[in-house]
Length: 295
Ligand code: SF4
Ligand code: SF4
Image (cartoon, rainbow, N blue to C red; front, top):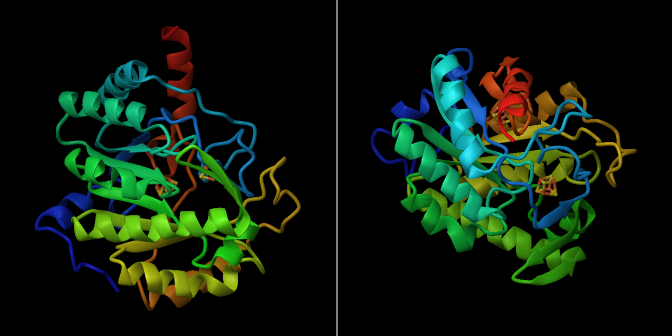
C-alpha cells in the first residue's frame, strides 16, 4: 500500500521520473551518483570502509572522491552525454550528512545549472534531526534512510560505534542514539513533504525476524516505501563470514512486507559513483574520463 499522507501536490508526478522510487522509470530515466561524501560517523558491521556505503556490489571497485567543483564538471559532462538524466543522488561512499558542507555545496552548484534535476540523499540518519530543515530548504524531496532495527540490543550487534557531537558511543548506548535520530528524522522529513525510502539490510538471525516491525514503524512515521536489501558480506568487515541473504529469503520477506507498505523490488545496489540506467551502469567509462581530465 502506498503511504501518501503527507505528499504535496505534484510530487508523485515528479517521482515518476525517479528510477529507484518508480519501477516504471527504471529503464527510461537515468540517475547519477556523485561520490562527494567520504567520511562516515557510524561503523556498521557489514561495512569494511573500502567500499561504498551499502551500495557496493562489486568488491575491489572504489569510487573516486569528487570535490564540489569536480562534481560540477562531471555533471556537465554526463548531462551532455546521457539522455534522460533525471536524478542526481549522493550516496557515499560515506554518509551524505556527515559531509554536509560538501554535499550542500555540490547540490547548490548543480541546481544552478539544471533546476529540473531531482536530488536524492542517502544517509544512516544519525544527523537528520540536525539537518532536516536544511534538506527541506534545499528543495530535496527524496531521502533514503537505512534503518536496520528498532531495538538497541539488536543494534549493538549491527553497529560497532557511533560518533555523535564529538563523542564516541558503543554498543547499545550508541545504537539507541542512532535509532532515536533515524526515527525522528524520518518523521520530520515525511511531515514536511519529503518522500522517504527506508533501506533495511536483511541479516540472518540478527534482524530478519524483526523486519516486519521496522516496516510497520516507519510506515507509521510517514515513510513512502521500504527497500529490503540482502547482506553482502564484505571482505574485511565484521560480518565477513556471515551468510549472504538468499534471493528466495529476500523475496519472501519483501512479499510479506508488501502487505503493509510499498516495496522496492528492483534495487541494484549501485556503486556510489553509478551513472546511467539502473541496469546499464556506465560509471567506469566516466570515472576513466574524470581521471584523465581532472587533476
Ligand atoms: Fe559504512 Fe554506510 Fe554504515 Fe557508514 S553508514 S559504516 S559508510 S555502511
Ligand atoms: Fe536506486 Fe538501489 Fe541503485 Fe540506490 S542502490 S540508486 S536505490 S537502484
